[in-house]
Length: 270
Image: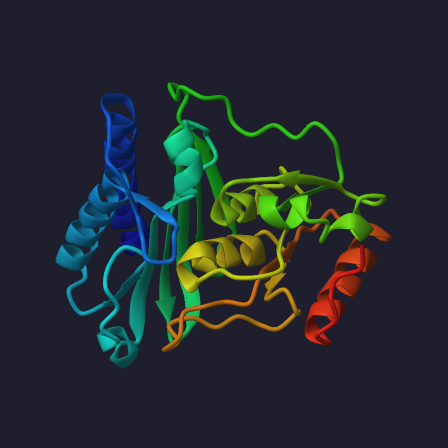
């Protein structure tokens, strides 16, 4: 898997440079049918990644947020799962809370993962069974994420605003973040203690981050606590709960209770 990660790293760094170039020179923004934004930078990054990975590994399948899904991938044992830019709204606003997220999945389980924040130069990667690696380009323009208060949960901004994490606030600092992929990478790197979304999401948002969490010794599940498998016919995911290795009770207990409420179909207590 070292060869695959080497090819992937080169492709992601090249695609990240293009994303930053477009951030500086200008890009077009469109609205998708689900009302989420997509930019010409998302599409350019997607094309660079697909060109490089498909040329190197033509037999592998492909699932990306910005490529029409034809389900041909379901016949493949190896599939690249890609979010060209996770946190597009942050990218549009010029905030350094977006990233490129790619995983190679084998038989439904992530085998390789890489998450790259080109604005901060942080590159998080893992090969299953070999731990997590974190690098940073010294010349990056933005400072990396720095936690101020711990224990820290990185959460969905809308869910925080409507009070879904009220029960956690006496035990964890809840900070909104624009990218669940970046949040998972930060938890895996020990920069935060948990990442939580109670609704929504897709495989491409979390495939790489799940492996990073697992290789760091943490645990990642759906919001209801169920294991996550990948390259399914329906790539939608019912929320995400990731807990890092350093989080202790009672904060961990309250996250588990929140997960149980999701599993039982109960609304989170406020």
